[in-house]
Length: 204
Length: 244
Image 1 (cartoon, each protein chain N blue to C red):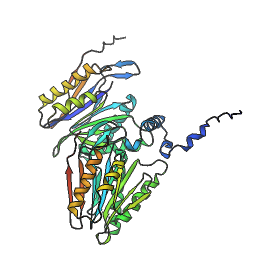
Image 2 (cartoon, rainbow over the protein chains, first blue to last red):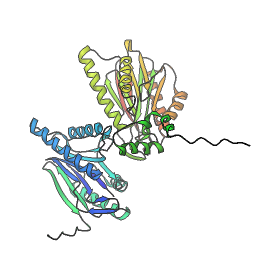
Image 3 (cartoon, helix red, strand yellow):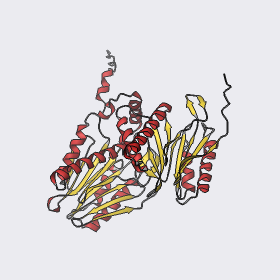
Image 4 (cartoon, rainbow over the protein chains, first blue to last red):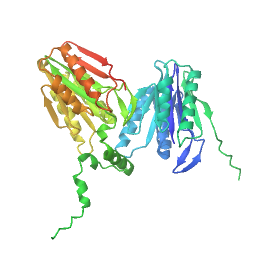
């Protein structure tokens, strides 16, 4: 089942997420990217109802882009987090989106940061965050091994530890994960951790 | 003997449920979520909190725990629950964290408008009425928050008050409590409080009351946050408690 988690390192932030698209007892695909690039220096890892997740993250992404076009400056990570929270909070009492979000970003003056925003729109800045069934393992693993001054290599090692723990201890463990990083050079895909491949679709 | 058959339970009986089960939203998913939660626990206990305010001699103290949880899982141990509205006015918001954040943002907005229009700070009594009015606006779909307001009013007279989620004020001369640890806070405050304490003794009392109360509550704790306010200064202290 869904696992999204992230952590802040020395001068970067990492978000990792499973890549399974599940509905009921069926796995529809195992290469679904659940971490969206919001803008050049922001990552939005999201879990929850598949449709809500796709709709909501795209809505936020486009509005963050619109803000940048209008004002010529990008939103800070904190501003984007508060904007996202505001949208979720207004939706909560009308037509709620069932999405949990880990928002990672890098700002020149502030450095890397991660914001935890759940579907009832509680927002909090954290060093390490996790959602879903994987959170029980990822949080425990990160509580034990996390340090604020980790290098990228150390952090990836920790992320791998979390993924291995989820894969080996969770009954409904997802097979594949994606890892993305944001630092001063921008947000980018870092690696995949695949244990099965989607079989290629033959051309019609 | 002639025994009357029990009356069939009419579906209308649901209308006597507590007000918070009657929230009407467009989405049935959200409705289900609230009902599901409420059948197990109150939505007020979703995140966990403990807030207390006490009056001393020309001073007051307001304290809270620092945990942000999602039911039994602890998400953060540095969550802010007490907000400074101006130098001599503080509000603590217990209950659902999301509503606490929303409510705080709305209160800041209203307070800034007041300050611009009136060119003065709001009195605690006035602020309490403002909070009450904002809460009652949402009478049939409330913010799931229980506020604690503490401030120094005219001639630095301390004022403390709490409210329920729909804005029914409860004024007190000695102490007020709110949150999931409120029962144990009542006990602790009842036995530790003395009238007219000096600032330092008040700090010691409120801190001990808070720490001993949250140790008997699963949903709050992980240290404390205390503000001590006298006419001349505001002291903010972070407490370490049982960090488990």
